[in-house]
Length: 343
Image (cartoon, rainbow, N blue to C red; front, side, top):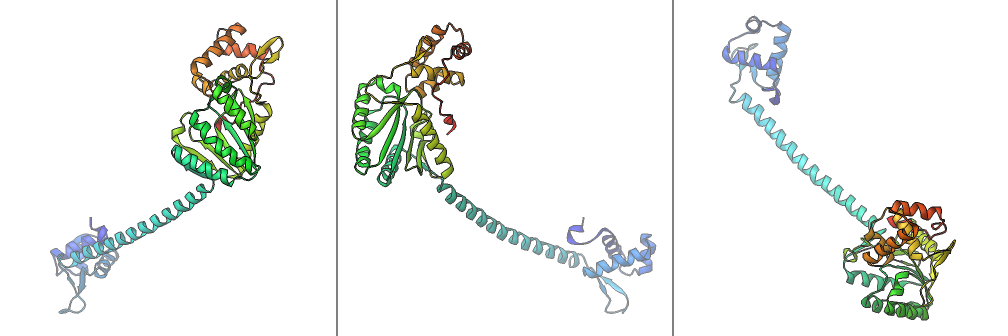
């Protein structure tokens, strides 16, 4: 039990024996303990080293035992001091570790901020978009989800469009076909088109998105909850992917004409872009709510389109509807769903 003080088991037994019989000689200890003389001598040396046994002043060549109150207490005090010193060094090391962690976290945060910036609240998002619009020199690419645009959204976009047009910035925007259900949005798109915005529409979009000069992009954190905020992306790799995504969707979108897009002929069956999108999205296993959001229509409207398609296909399940649509060639050449739903 005294090993934490640096006193081994054999030395402790020798010390105990000497406390009981301070007059014991080496031979007496060997006889009493029944050990080899070398083991007793080694244990005595350890006790001397720890100042538990000292040379006798009165009888040179003999040893005297030091009382436990002095000898063991001294060992205990020394161990406590060493322990306190070690605690102090550990506390200092802990502070230094915390500094390393803080420096690393700050460096990581700076690195992340060069690639991703988080915006919270509509005011902060619109302020940042206004700043990017002011700095935009060549091109603005936009996905406008949600179908019919709110009055607040329409009013906010017009001054930005005018500023960009005056500086000769190329503007290309893709809206959902469902905007044709709202006369106010259609009139707004006519206004944008007249002021230089090249507007197209498509059946579905993965997410709202703005890309400025192919170097910075603004996307919602949660496509279903704009109040959750937005992300500003600066990294070259992700921006390249978003640019490619936009070009792919742009290529398949229809130029805005002020009138509803004409359905495409599919072997005697006419499918609208919305219907093609519904078939594709259902084939991906998306819920009615997600399908409706991507189309920019109400869930009720989305379910009505699904029911009508299943009726036309004579299908009893969505899986069967997708299978028959594929057999009829209805899904061939359909607009690719911006595989980037994950973006």
